[in-house]
Length: 171
Ligand SMILES: Cc1cn([C@H]2C[C@H](O)[C@@H](COP(=O)(O)OP(=O)(O)O[C@H]3O[C@H](C)C(=O)[C@H](O)[C@H]3O)O2)c(=O)[nH]c1=O
Image (tube, rainbow, N blue to C red; front, top):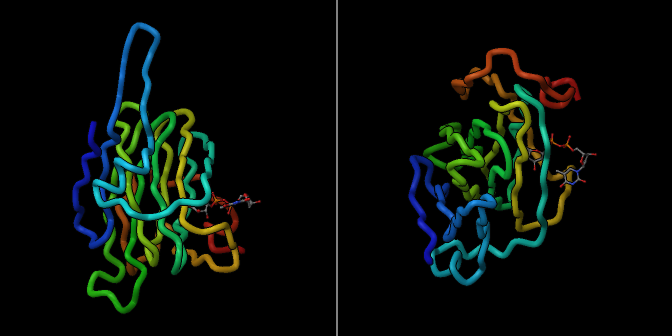
């Protein structure tokens, strides 16, 4: 059993395949995190909080991040289009983004370092967005990048997503 870790176009952002997926007549079993195996694969972050959000089709959450939190994102159910944006003005990749489609079929995960924003739009009836994070939640520390920020110019598969007031730039 080993974790498969691939680099992406964004320095520090990694695409991960979990170590185990067992299917039988009852369904499926997946180890979504295993400290020993992930550390051996170079995922050395210490996660101290787990979160889920459950969203309906075409809900878009984000783009949010902060300067100190790393996240390991998974899709527990359904399918969503995840965007990660470099939000470090000192980086040569500042404002560059990449997208990933995570689902309960491909079981792919994405490791997002600090100083990156992430947002996702749901492509199934419902989706469960899960992440492990390396800090405790602190709303005051977060930044928001508007999903349609013209200086980032993200190509979303949903032209008119369902957004919170914050994600519409109203809060
Ligand atoms: C993030 C978070 C939120 N909450 C509470 C605060 C609110 O009462 C409620 C909803 O929070 P919010 O509207 O900020 O949730 P999202 O808009 O989905 O934001 C999150 O989703 C984007 C895509 C992220 O990756 C961020 O971690 C996070 O900002 O949950 C908590 O109690 N703990 C938490 O860690």
